[in-house]
Image (cartoon, rainbow, N blue to C red):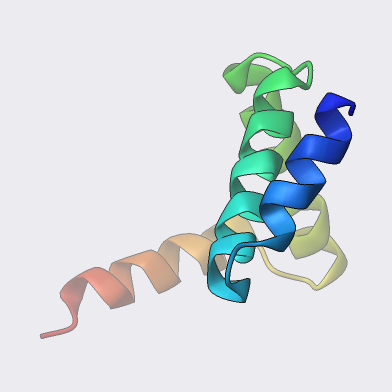
Amino acid sequence: MTLKEILLREIETLPEDRQENVLAFVRFLKVGLAETQPTEHQFADALARARAIAASRGITEQDVDAEIRAVRTEP
């Protein structure tokens, strides 16, 4: 019996909520195996995308600053 078959057999005997935990753990393991960009590069890319979306919707840096100030002054 292969490791894959053993794993499948063991998973099949678990209750469904535990199977969901196994799935979440497998996905967690896969993320750790994937090559990732340095955090700074990911942040820069996300910020550039957010700015592009804001620009396409007519949202300026001043609009963002005003919203932040408004939220910070709320009681």
